[in-house]
Image (cartoon, rainbow, N blue to C red):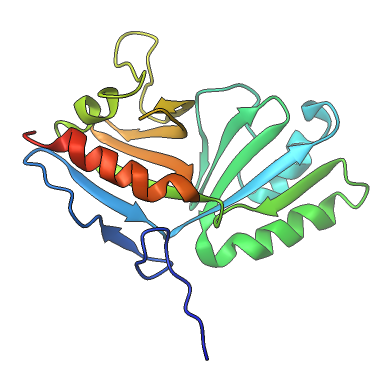
Amino acid sequence: MKLLAQSALGAAFGASQPVSGFESHGAVLRERADIGSVMLTTSVEPGSIAEAAGNVAGVEIPRVPGPLKTAPGRWGLWLQPRTWLIRCGVEEEWDLVKRLNAAFPDRRAHAVAFTDAICWFELSGAVAHDILTEGGFISLERGGLPVGSAKRTLVAQIAAIVVREGESAWLVAVERSRARYFAQWLSAAAQGR
C-alpha cells in the first residue's frame, strides 16, 4: 500500500487549492500546501549566529518582529527573540534543514522541518481585510501591519501568523490541527461579503 501525502484539508500536498465551501463576491481563499517552512531556533544571543544562518538559508535572518526579510524564493520572519520561520519551497525543506544543522554542529542553532506542523491559507480580495478582522486584531491604520510584514496574533480565537503580502493579499498560518476549523470560520465570516 502506498500512502500519498495530503494537505491539512485533504487536497494534494505541494499544491495551491481553492478551499471548498468558501463563497465570497470580494475574496478568494486558497489552501497553500505548496509553502515549505523551516523553524530555526538558537540557544545563544541571535547576533552570534544570524549572519552565518542567513548565508546558509539564503535569506537574512530578521532581528526584529514585523518586517519580513526577503530573497528570491524565500523569506524569513521573526517569531520570538531566538526563533525564526524561513519560508521555502516544499521540495527544499529537508535540504535546508540539513544544511542549517550542518552549519552549527555545536547546536548553537537548530533547524527543524515545520511544513507538517502548520497550514497556510491565502486570503485575497477587496474584503479580505474585513473577513480577517472579524475575529482578530489586524489593523491597516498607521503603525498597523504594512505590506511585507508579519505578526503573530489571534484570529478566530486561535494562534496564527499573519503575513501581509499585498494591499489585499494575506497569508495566514495556523496549526495543522486547527486548519479545518479555521477554514470553516473564514467561510462563515465571508458570508454575504
